Length: 264
Image (cartoon, rainbow, N blue to C red; front, side, top):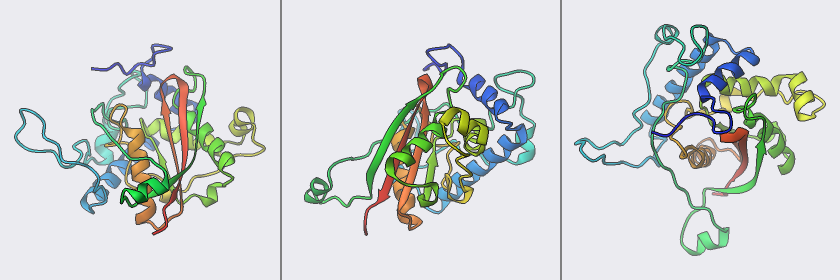
């Protein structure tokens, strides 16, 4: 089993998420409520057939084929609040219920020039308009990179947050993603760490990770392409133009991307 510790510090990512949540005033209740939202959205998207690009797989030695993600939980807030801290004990706030599962998986997509895609008979879903990478302190800000990448990618693309119709962020932990959202709303953080004159502002949750993020979409090394395909599919389904994607990574790194829906 792969290690889930940050290679540069030796700290387990759950510890980092717990400290990050505390630093940005994310409560245990906030995390449990967000986890409940994430799993409910995944269940809804699955039942509505929105995840049509998930392939059926056959596991050796298992009779039944797997055609849907099996990490979606049908929890209640009452059940989530009863779980014990998983990393910082006894007073931590990150639990098994508000963390992504340690799973295995794979993802793939085709990226090529538009003329080449059309010549091969493919129907493009979206343009990759812009991308960027950022790196932060892997000890104190290991999972906070998406806040920096969001600011940077919009500046590079010449867009504002009001231009974005679809937001897709990797959710490793509910506490991590809520800390990122709180950081973007913090005037002092945005001024002191991003060099902005004001807070970035609130990302509307009605446009954010609408097909879920915390539960199925965290297979090791597979989620970044998954974010891209999900955002492209959401742009089509929700009749949007631009999507912003971001994900944290080991070493305090993060990536940001802008997709634009391909004309129908």
